[in-house]
Image (cartoon, rainbow, N blue to C red; front, side, top):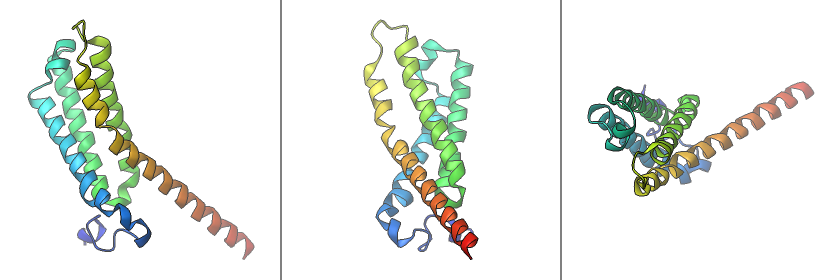
Length: 156
């Protein structure tokens, strides 16, 4: 029964969205899994760049938070009915990645911040931003259907 609710169920993606099937079934879950892994690494090992800027406990906590947020993203990608959770999770995930990049640029004790790491972090943002865009479009479509249903109910 749980499998029938997942994105991997054959009927989970409507025909008009079939072009996004690999995005939803493969790439978003892979992205979220890698984000979980990154969070675990940050919590267990730390981040050499962040460890120079912040206390180790703060970095560990940020890594644990990143792990939890990425896990929520993965669960909500796997179960499309949890799209609201995915929306919130992706916004927080993007915010955390952007904050990490900003910390490197603004607070690095090095006179020359590590621009390569900042650019790699920026490189990781288009996929979740694209997904947020898709979620926004889906919200607009749901709203339009509800409004049309309400108008037809008023006319009946």
